[in-house]
Length: 268
Image (cartoon, rainbow, N blue to C red; front, top):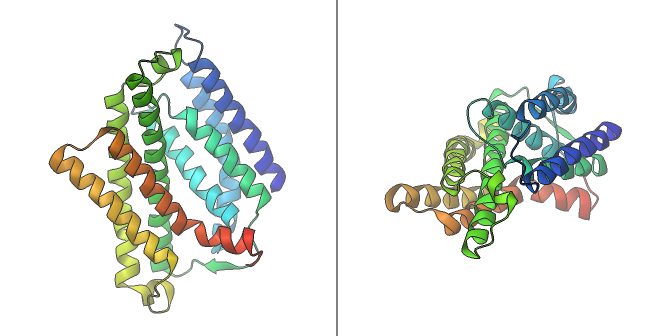
């Protein structure tokens, strides 16, 4: 499986390099989106094989490598599907490098021996809502980074070919908030279920752990962003920075304990 992860990392990395090279060329020819989506359609099944193999055995691996592999696969799948309905040009500048780094992490830190059974339907629904929300927030964070990049270049009056490759700033912000809203609905299901039905989901009472703290904190951050955007038309650089901060909190909840236990303490 490590060989597959390395191969995927090279291919995703190559797609990211091509996107950056094309964006800096100031070429008048359109970006070869159809070719990119065809290549991605060929890579996603191989990526899915690593994701779904343990799930078909009703097991959910407990490891940072698998967590990143699963979240990245969903992000790429959402990008592939969304490209048929929205103009997502520019997202590949960050999505493919992030996918390549995730594959290298999956190869370096494979899933340890311990895992969780997913035969419990409430637990399976909780995990499904959580991972899908993380993936949507991951896409929102990438859009936020593009917003910050474009905003900085406009403020500094630095016009470059890369700016013409990116969508308009307002389009990036709109996609960022749409991704956040969809992720927030799923995160509300995940956090609300964990708080209200801990015995049904986890088989034990709710405990105050770093995962629950950062999960609730990220929910509050995203709720605040969406509320201010709705009531005060909050957007721009500040909203993008808070979007990235919310995603950092979410990642600390999702992979923080896995990183500490598996990478730093070398424990399952």
